[in-house]
Amino acid sequence: MEIVTDNQRFHLILADVAMAMAISTLDGGKPVCEGDYQPGAVRDGWLARVTDPALRQRVTALANAGLGALQAVAGEDLVEKARRFGVPLSAELAREICEHFAVRRERVLTYRR
Image (cartoon, rainbow, N blue to C red):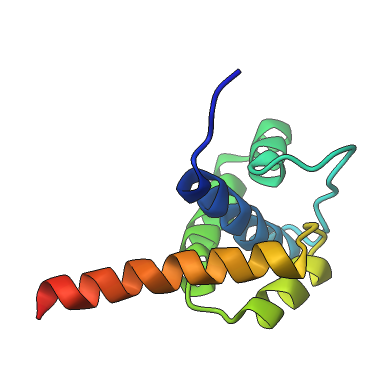
């Protein structure tokens, strides 16, 4: 069993939310989290099912941009976006994710001063 750090898990969750948003926008559907949700399942599941290279490229590019934007979203907004696009996310986990990325931003700002 592979051990995933909090940093990796938080990135996978945000990547799933961003991917779900991109899929909804460009592929016209809602990705479904089947069974117990595992971080990364939305992205990996969709990429495994879709064979059109142009669609894969467009969705992946939009999701990558969305991932960057989601790193600055407040906890309650993150929960709403995740719920709206079918990714299960608790308010507590959203708070942890937001804290994690806020600390990272602060470290970068402190380092660059």
